[in-house]
Image 1 (cartoon, rainbow, N blue to C red):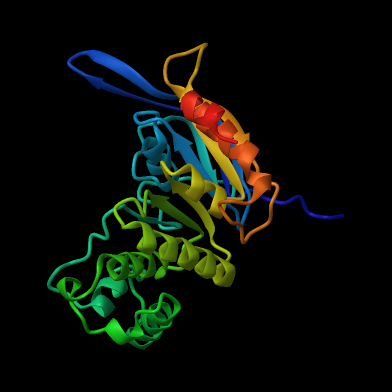
Image 2: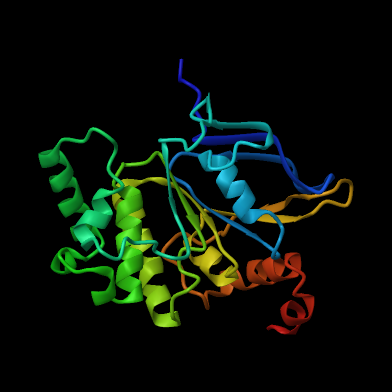
Length: 263
């Protein structure tokens, strides 16, 4: 008998509310989502729709949610060691070398020789071998973000969570980082969940795109739709097969005037 495939991440009826001064505001409600091993999933939505809140729940950075989040059939833990997260800012230690910053991501108890080899492998993977001994002030923003990605990959995570990882980069560097992410994913196959405001970025990188939007039946945002690009990677922004999907995504974000004016 063929064994049933286990989802990498499962969300069931996930909700999150935050309270201040005796009042409570529902941010997320009724989130149901299955993420398969090796997928790249993008989460998009208007500002304040709970994208980062959902990402934090997936990694155990926030355990105040209701419902259930499972990673390979086991409940997510606080600061779950099976996950690694990358942020919009590289958050490198300014006094440490690129090598030492990447090494911070290694699991506790990693032997020195094993850790050194792993860090060297990752620096090569993200194209930073020549900058291994540099401090953050001596490298560009794009290189710093590469170091941040290498640090997140150092523990060989089961789930890589990225919160607007390229949002602060200039357009050219952003394109290079998008390609780097695809190259790293092709070599590692790590299940990746990324929050982004950029529809074109989501179309280029994702196996599926999750749209969060306010629910008409309840307070808080929920999954309004899940889109699957019909074109295999690598993709191009101008691919005619993606035009209709891009317009759907823009409309889902409330950019109806721009969406309807295209074509």
